[in-house]
Length: 89
Image (tube, rainbow, N blue to C red; front, side, top):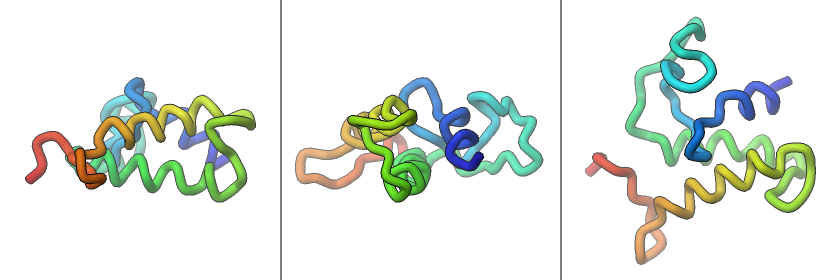
């Protein structure tokens, strides 16, 4: 059930957010959060349960979910390997 919830809350760009006023919830979650500038962290945390339970971008029912999350993280990787969050210094 937890993986299903996470998959449903993945955003169109492949990442996740700690703020649930966008995506499936549209603010209906009882605790929608307000940390909208930590998308890389949210995506990393969301991917952990998928990877930890054996899902990958190559196989399993959540392969598209995992692939989207990995693509999001790789798209925000700087030239030296660090993560670059837009608008966050």
